[in-house]
Length: 506
Image (cartoon, rainbow, N blue to C red; front, side, top):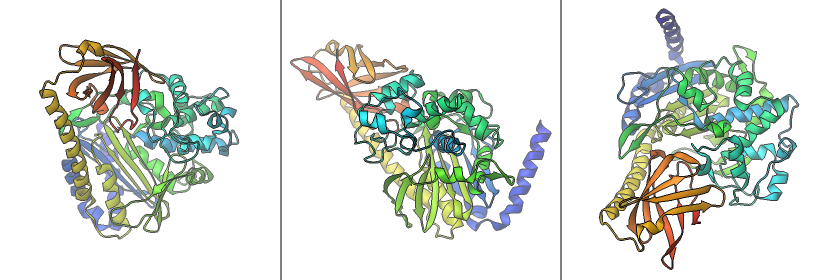
């Protein structure tokens, strides 16, 4: 095995060396040190960066370690969870089914899921397959995700909860990033093909592309070899997270892959669906996924020209200095990643990181893109880190103020025992509050692995510290009337959901 790896490494090095002559000077001279500097700034244990240009791998390197505190190095075959970069694969599967005349993307969801139900009856009847994967269903960004994310709910229960959630906007009125829509897509794929989403993904994309290291489910990722461990920052310190199961939302974000496997996905995206000169995915399918479906917003770039951002079938679409960019990012517990294509320039960039507390995964790609477009060096990392650090400092100060309030030992307006009991949210289910010696404990019906420690900070408010750091530290507002607790507002970290959930005491 060692001799085989050595041979492959030599061939890989030879390929990169032969291609180095055409690399921009920033890539050949400075990118390695630039990446290492960024990792140090953002406290990233491990990362892997891929550049594909003109159908060849121009750069593919792993940096750092798979697990903080270990010496197990990241390499080009190390698996990272890629989060919402999964969505482009799901969108491609739908477009493939249309190409094979097994469905039409303008078809109504109920053609394939007759019992599918949303809160809005009109939306239930008119919702089509494009709606569910282009984020125009009427929901706000991340709305409802708390209910499903790392929960005990299965796929069918996710769709049941989703169907009872009141939308924030009118149907198709505006863009709202809706992860659960991709769960609907997965169910449609199953009903059309009689194969589960992950199995159909392997049959139609992973096996034909020889992406042999890529896994479709987070459970498979946890059992695979050569995997990066998930990390986060707690009070500025790097902490290893346990592997989480997010397979109840698999079509939206459960895949794990490496830069070497993803190089094949990038090559076919840039070469009209061909790999090694052979058509693997029809170019019409790739074109279909890149057709704009939803206006997201006006684009904002700190230095260069970009006017709009649109959404296709699992791809974000935007203009940049007169070029077309097709991209997506992915964030799941302990991982942040980005995949970026410039089709006319035959350029693709992938950045994988094993921490969920950084913006490195986005800024590094802009420096690489600018180098290939002969645009000025901007030092995006320092610019991005300053913004990131400002936001992080504000958050830490906010938490510190809450902690300072806890130390005051303020008296609750009614005895702590009066807060005990079961509370119900009309869609999620129940939460239970249990009084302890000088704090309250939160338990959630569908999140058996998560608890919350509630400590009083005044004005009928408790600061909740979740046992899972990804859920954050947030303030719950309680409503008290006639010395009786009526309800409380539950909040989780914005990384998961922006929505406030009102739980009413039973």
